[in-house]
Amino acid sequence: MLSQACRMLTCDLLLASNSQYRCVIDQCVRDTVSRLRLRRRSCRAGDHQRRRVLATQFVTSSVSKPRHAGEILTVTGNRPRSDVNTGQLFHGHRDVRPTAAKTVPCRSNKDFIRLGLFNARSVNDKSAAIQQWIVDTKLSLTALVETWHDDASSPQLIACAPPGFRYVEKARPRKDNLSTSTNHGGVCLLYEPSLHARVVQLPVFSTFESIAVFVHRAGFHAVVVVVYRPGSCSVTQPFFDDFSDMLERLTTFSAPLIIVGDFNIHVDDATDMQAGKLIDLLSCHNLRQHVTSPTHEHGHSLDLLITRDDQIITMLPVDPPLLSDHSFVVAECDCLPTSTPSTGFRHVRNWRGLDVDAFAADLQGSELIVTPPADIESGIDCYNATLRALLDKHAPSELKRVTSRPLSARWYDRECRDVKRQTRKLERKFRRLRTVESQTAWRQQFDSQRQLYQRKFTSFWLDTVNSCERNPRALWRPAGRGLTASTSTAALLGQTLC
Image (cartoon, rainbow, N blue to C red):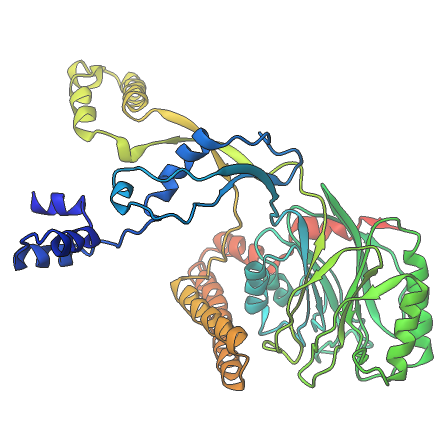
């Protein structure tokens, strides 16, 4: 009884009563209150419950509902600065404050497309980290350059795609098809399941690698071009001729244009002649370059994002390089919200609310127990009918709306979550302090996270394959999912735009 009574009070109220009215509270009661660990109640206590009542009683504004899409109704008000009787707050009373209803803009992740760019310098031992980066950053489009892959069926490239993602790729052609050396270069564009893509045919340019894709969904469409110009080659006039040729071909599309990639040109250096020529070429085609922060470990802006002048692009902060010698570049492209949310319906039963005793009592008095059928077929039918009827009575099936969410990789376990949590903690510390020590600690932790992801990814597939080594049919099923590109990606090669 004492514990129940103390839960209705608070430490503040007890202590205030003791000091004001000189109530006698012995040490036993004080120890009991301390062990309950009651939270302090201030003037905001219970505000979430009284807000609905106040909004119903005192809102007099003429605004009754949002007038435009993407707005929400909000009740605002200010409490007068007069003294408040704190004793009334514990009885559900509060000073009347003038309130008004107004609409405020509501921005969701469906109002924009998030695009990422990364120079991987080989995805061989970074596929797990790249996949997790795409999931954590919630990227809809991901451009990878210097993938160092051979074709669309490269296991390392397939492992970079999160579940449901598809991709379009273009490997650097080998001079010797029988060579087993590393195939440098390569570009790839990964896109989420809600997007549809078609390849845009472009000629093969000798001075840079490129791939163009037309992506679209409800409320968004654009031509995305991924470009990689090798840094081992000097910037010459043929490059500007090829790049100008590509821009002229892309001007025939009325859709928004997004060009991303590693150009290996120091656009941040105002004295660089080649950078000036590139900026002048973009200006002639009414294009604009958005990256202003260094993207390379040597402090230059090499990874660029280029769009038309009238497109709205929001660049996210560019952090120092972690996974390679290039930084992650992320931007948000404004678009209209999707028309249909990714939701569905499913029949569920409230198993937690099942009264086991009542269910067992009804089962004892059912036909299945009292007069069981003689033959097997009738017994099975009676069993199914009886249990279904009892379940519908004690745990009826209900139609619930469910929202589909992306699934984590099967190798992503609690250890990965703990390491990721520590990495995010050090990242927030670096963003707050901006010191060399915090950056070093963050980078070391990120390297440990990358190695853990790759180790988990490798061990998961090794264990999966080894567990099915004596069953070829069972072996091919997981191996096919892990080493084969999705059918939509494979079929995409036949869907082209001229």
